[in-house]
Image 1 (cartoon, rainbow, N blue to C red):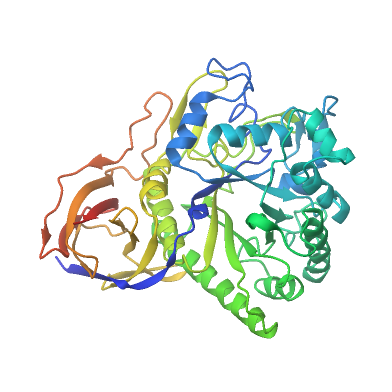
Image 2: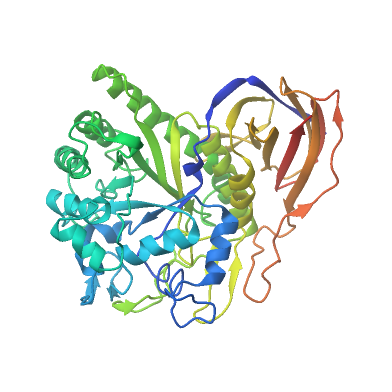
Length: 508
């Protein structure tokens, strides 16, 4: 059996991990809101109607930021429908559902406080106007004395929400988007939205205490768009001086009808890395063209496994229908773990990441209306890494074998190494996409003497095994015997075929 050597030196770093890379996403889609995070009649519901069992699982995931209210939904959404006492019931044209608006901005802000996360709000750039975007910022962030800020106070929020993170629209490159625009049209509109949103927030000159807005401009919804990456270049050339992040979205799925279905699916993480690389280069080009000293980063604010080819089974115009409720397999968890490694290995460029979504809709958490909740297979790699893989990503050098997929050449062993100097811990995430076990020689140099503190392995003989309400623990990680560390820096591991492994070491 060939031994794979992986080398990492603490002095060779990629970049600091922004905690927001472990963010998530809640959209008014299916049962993400109603029956997901919000269900007033549920036995565990608190006084605000929030499911406390779901809140507990969200806290276990250690999610720091959540994007809301969309997604495609936001491009036809008037935020004023979701505040105050008299809320209209509308047709949601994005997902062909009925929206009661029972849950809106104020409820989301309360939920964020209960969950211990910060909000990442999106404004409507489809049917919405620049003025409406500014008005939502005013409602959320202005202390008082204006009609909108006093309206917020009447609605129960005496203090401003001080929302810092804002998405200027969603997937405006997509013809499926309500109010779809060309790159030039959207770029011009996004500039004006950014300007008035900042002015509304008091940023005509400067704000004290670091309260300036962090604005995300819509980039390509996937790299297979005909307009990619020209869309991103054109939009950035308009908006670069005004925004902080470029959005990017990407989903993957296992398709049995492909020539190499498993290999094509397992190559997802490497394709994700290439997507990031292209937009990293686009950002660098536009920065140079603008002769700018400031940096704009990437917000990978939608990513996950999603079976987009699955047919809809619910009738249209139903309120909170069962939509996109993918039940994740063990192999889905392996792909998700590799995608998390990819985000970490691009920590210098990707500063926000949103697992899409959080509850029920292509999500790590599943619920029954009025009943139980369970952790999906993809829950576990995310939870372990969000808690422990912080600090700085360290560059790795690997002698891994490779395999061919529809995306090109991919690595059989996918790894990420993170060094948290505050906690004095080194975390290693390893995915073996091979059909055989592999021996790993892991050399972690310049960290100091290491001692293995935790070793976890996720493996299953059935790649299509799932967790369910009746068998919620069918696919879970297992604690393993701690490996020895030779010479304070070398660790030898055997990774089972098709597995994810998590190693945490303490710097002595």
